[in-house]
Image: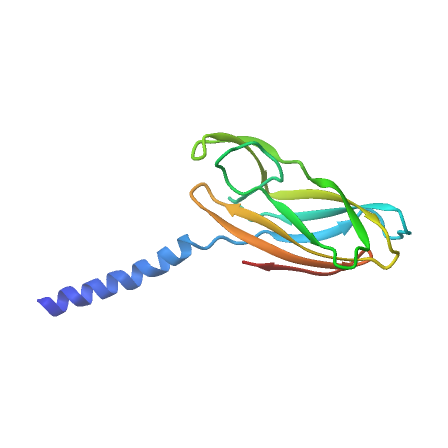
Length: 165
């Protein structure tokens, strides 16, 4: 009888574990980067667009909202070691929606389906290089996971956009 009970428990756990692992699995948003124009000279400004295709039933938080103890807003961090460009103001969310979050008890701004974030930069050197990270949370109704993409561009040619955790 004891062997049957242990065998039943093992079978039950083997069926339950994949469900628990799947519950923790949230697909990351697929990001791309585009520039407002291609030919740029010294002292020109150009807008970078970070475009995220958000998987079904998920959301990504916008760049700005007022919530004292809420989720992490999307943030762009530039690595500008050779000082070949200047970041103008802060990143702006385009097309986000205002939603009240009962868990955090505050009003947030959130993207569904597609996220668009724009950032203006001023070019100091014609052959500028941009590197950085975009940090965001991808969320279901029940949970959020943090993600980061690393990006790199030489001039307006995007070299790398890769998801990491």
